[in-house]
Length: 396
Image (cartoon, rainbow, N blue to C red; front, side):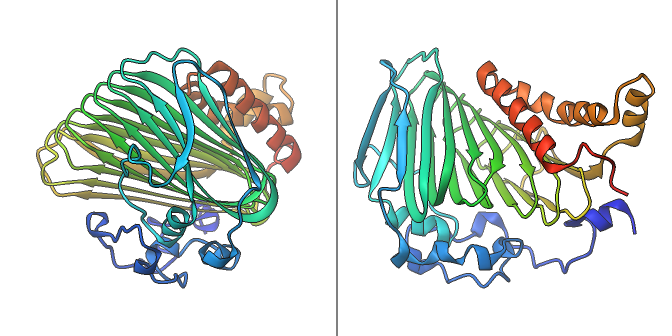
């Protein structure tokens, strides 16, 4: 069997039955849990998720409160409040896309509200730190509103242990420029389900960055809305999956307005028995979306035997008057030629492997644009490599 057949499965390899395709444009969305049947694991959106490890998320009777600490870095130019879910300033951004997201919406009684004012030029990143101290079910909502012509960076980090079901809404007004970063650095026992919902206004530049390096099971779905023409959305993702971990990322770009631009780039590395990554990238180009320019890419680097990666890019086009559209997915091991080149110049094999992995991630990390965060991530990747055994020798 070929490398991709042994190490990867999904959209392009024919190793699983292909489901009947359903348009994302007509997929059910609702704020009511009752509108979503309890998943069995056979549905398209759940077929890769280990349901036996995830089903407790759907049990509305098992949610508690008070085990999460939330700290927001003070900033005189930004308002942070904990407000009731009924606060009229919280204009909903899209709607939940599955039952877990609807449970999060109903169970969270309050919202962490970050309000960036019109014309606000926030020079320092706004840090939101979420830390858990118990494996109890928690529901959480975070709402970020970026006013017209504002400019800011928001960094959300998750540490400790928790079973967190989370809703994140990012509402970016016309002519604003926002970078939103979500870091998952959980303990290895944590479970994290989240639905990120993003809205970009006219002439908006929105960068959404996901970094998943910790947790037992992490499942993040990101949905987008272009609210007006000439919006610009860039979605970057990075993940490093270790033994027994399941990391699942589901970005969705919906081009429904003319002359909008999007790029989706996710990169992941896997090491250790049972490490499993899932990436499902959906893109819809609607009938009104003339002049669309979009591309999505997923690349996976397999570091040891015993891992599994599912990578499924989907592109749905309802309009022929576009600038460009495409997708790509690739999974492979260490490049033997790269290793040989480095080792032939006197570099030890472990160091050569480290350099290859650093190079794989470095370009993506450099795009974050926050030096302290970039340095921190490279240090974490080094630690993952040391702990996981990928530096000890090539897989046979």
